[in-house]
Length: 260
Image (cartoon, rainbow, N blue to C red):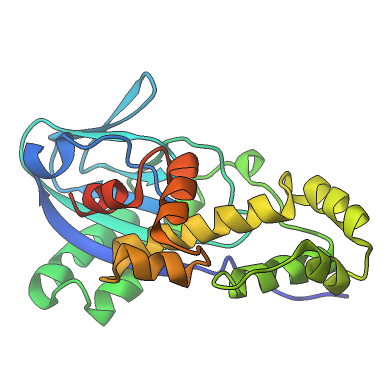
């Protein structure tokens, strides 16, 4: 009997407290990015919108935003804004775009207040803030309905191939080499890969490269040329073209928007 305990593979990217105002949030375009977000505001004064839905951010709730959700932010009046960015493994990888409201409980609201207070005292990199943030994220994720989750790849051969691709985003990876890893001929491998992932191997690889590039654009000081090389693109031109096709904007615009 398999008694293995499921681990969602949480990776906390940032845990920060900022002062929102019209100049640094409300004027932004779509803030889609390939990671989860968790928001809590100390007071009313800001909203998040997805299509025709506008969700006020209040001190009595938390807001979860799945990866690649094309939402917009609006600030009515200045407000302290706690935000956590993080990634998770399957089945939390491809949740459809949405805004998940997590009604505040005494435990979650106290955690949010403690995180904000800890950052004010010790700065964004405080270890205690990161530990508290991890606890808050796990509690908030229980509000994502199970029917919105997609199971991960159940074929171990293809999971190994996808892991190899993600570990070698800076290298050229041929379909024939991937097929050999899966012990299949190339055409059968491509068909099966599409059935498993919904994408061809090269489209999957391109998507993962652009997602990695998003992380580097947001969280590193590397130049766009360096990021292009680190994610397997031959030059900035081809990188920018692929990035724009998948994200709807160029990498320089994405970086400015994330820094907004």
